Length: 229
Image (cartoon, rainbow, N blue to C red; front, side, top):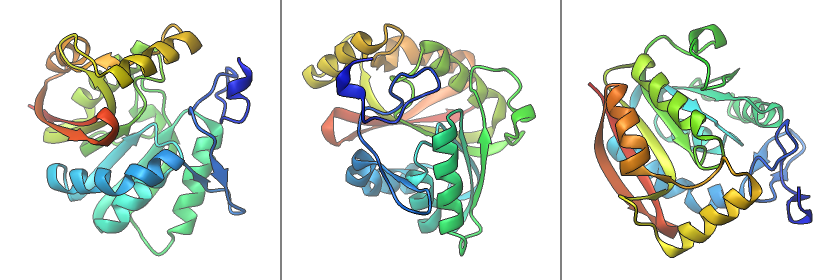
């Protein structure tokens, strides 16, 4: 691990879990600078394209800020945090405690999306929606495979999955995303920006998911909405 990563939150492997320094407050909540910049527009897109009531399973919830922000705005949701990282799980628990006036937040549960039996980890058998931000490019491709396959198993018919982050499209990628992807691969050869059409659509189709909406976001990111058949 290079010196440039020394202040970043680390995974169990010792590799950076998030490519930014995160602030912590006394109650254990983590704060992400990038989420501070994008959480409002992510919430707006979620509100326009995703279930506004029902059970939502968030995958790789990270600091917990997206869930707290969306669930606070949409009181009809039951939002379940999940992650595999101990520090992130602790931050999610702290956000749940901080938002104790809201009954919407649940978990966190320790969920590895690459396993088959999500229910054994505490995931709902059927969810109205799933949400995942900025995970599949900072993880082995098996995580993307597991996420889409799991969404096919656990979403109700008509349920929706929202992915947020950088993507390539049909072999074309924005220069900034290409540079970012090369930097990710330098850090870990199993990481990298995924091609939405070539890498993910075939997996999603096999899982019974249909690409429903692609929303352009700031900084060459996308919000991608899938619907369970």
